[in-house]
Length: 522
Ligand code: ADP
Image (cartoon, rainbow, N blue to C red; front, top):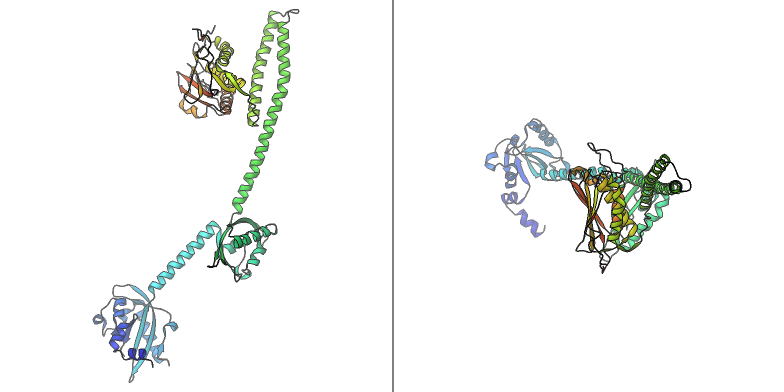
């Protein structure tokens, strides 16, 4: 016997009982408590004075008191005198304050004459049980989260080749743990043959070069079903950089993939349909313009033929043809513009453009539109300081005609449209077209530049239009690197404005100004 053991053995029994962290409870032959150490006091919350000589029932919950004498009797009859902890399952006890305790115990029987005494060493398992319950709960939560996300995690021991999958991976792959070999090779076999090499290359690349493992591939389940999964993973290495393990996740993204694929197909289809529509519009507009020009040309020849003069009625009919034809030609031209914009084929020819001249032309062109309703077009710009723009002459003209014509169309009888302009501090010409018309209600403003948007006029006579003028104008202005906007007040009128870039180092050409800036409505 070595010295340390001798020291312990020579320890007085009282001190020995205080040394152990297990609770020690001894029962005399009457099954009353005879020993109750400090650990027992802490565990059962009684002082030893309180329990000494009291029956063991004090420490047992109500429901197990009746069965207890039978169990003691059984042990008394057994050949063994001691039963170690590992042979007994747990027992339930109760503390002074009513706390239920689950204990693991060793029991020793010792006889004094014919009387049997029992000593129990008790270890509290309640905390362990709580911990394992928490662990079980969090594992169940993790499994549930994985099932919801259809996502599992795996571990591949690169040294042994073993693979560990969570339950959800088995679910994704449609396999059962007992029928899967759980090796890297077995995993490769589950992959769609067309993707296998790619996956194997990606894994090798990650192991050899630490390239992030991120791959989408197909798998074939045992029932033949094809699924799409996404995998992410990384390699764990030892101190010398040798690969030890690869950890990763796999997620079933079949549904997302199918939705994405359907979306790609739908977008492709829509794009094709859009291209077809643009081509159709462009060719139709072209086909319509040729005969229309012929109709207009011949109507004008008929009307102007002095050798065969027409009757007054025939002149009137000719004018109808020309007016209707002109209207149709404008519509066709606008449609052709739209088709070009849609197809991204808007040809711009940027040049130095004298803004005053263009505005003057536009005013002259649009003024007749307002005559019948006595709407005057007031040009406060053309005869002011000369301004040169870096822009497309034709498109600038088209923009201004659209805005002035709208100012006339959506005006009140005897109203006015005023064109004004000034240079901005940042190199633009700001041109405004202000009308005294019906104005635009707050709720209609957001969609003013939407294609085909027209405001429903309830208490106004209907105004002819197609709803493409403003949308086209905005696209043109933006293509000319300009800006567009408007302010409006219902019942008072609107101001539509554009800003187009000035030529750099713009030189002003001085022009004679006249005092009359107003084009008389006639
Ligand atoms: P259209 O005049 O052919 O309908 P536009 O695109 O030029 O097409 O204009 C779209 C709509 O915006 C018009 O139908 C009209 O309701 C409104 N609008 C345009 N200009 C004005 C304006 N100056 N005042 C009031 N409403 C306007």
